[in-house]
Amino acid sequence: MNLESWIMKLNIKYFGMLAELTQCSEETMVVEATTIDELLEQLFDKYPGLQEKDFQVAQDQQIVLKENNITASELALLPPFSGG
Amino acid sequence: MNEKKTKNVFKEGAISSEFIGESIAKHQSKTGIGAHNIFLGQVRADEVDGKKITAIEYTAYEEMANLKFHEIREATFDKFDITCMHIYHSLGRVKAGEICLFVFVSAPRRRIVFEALEYVVEEIKAKAPVFGKELFEDESHQWKVNT
Image (cartoon, rainbow over all chains, first blue to last red; front, side):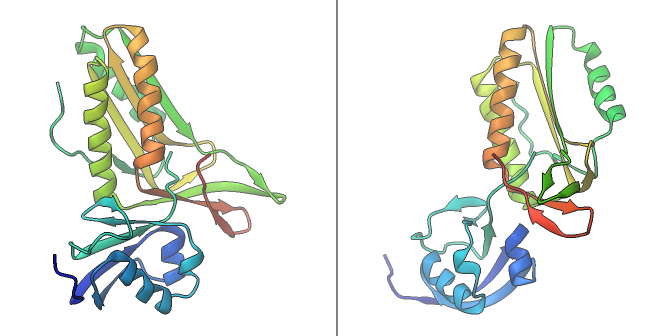
């Protein structure tokens, strides 16, 4: 397992109240991070207020834990679901 | 009888009663079916702090949601002996009183469709990344929370 951080280009999608907060539905960011947690730290710096929100992270269209490594180039921040 | 392909579940705007009626009619040729069960989600004009909700505007992480709907469909076929099932969910604006979710399950006999329909609707509420923005008469809004 490689524990070094990688510099990578990610496409990050925001939905619902999170898109309202970030004022964009998606963006491309160059980040230095290994885990999703590390990425979130950088997003919290960029978007104060995001930290207080309740959300899950999807990677490759599957919900993942925040401790997980980043393995995809597309990630999505999903607020609580309210379909139906 | 699994349906292998990921379908697009989303429809722009409200789901019309004509569409629902036609869906029922299409099953007349499937004479092995003895019971249909239908769930229709309708937008409720809740009142919050004296303001009435006039519509819900739906957005979704569409690719992931369609994948989830596909997984729910597969799981339902595995769990219940149903003949067929259909799911349609609205995107965009749906006014109070209009239909935003249509779930349709069919089986040879009644007991299975009662159980299967409840399972599907609960799974959709819990697993599909769909987001509702509740719009008030004065153009303000709040984000819907499923209870």
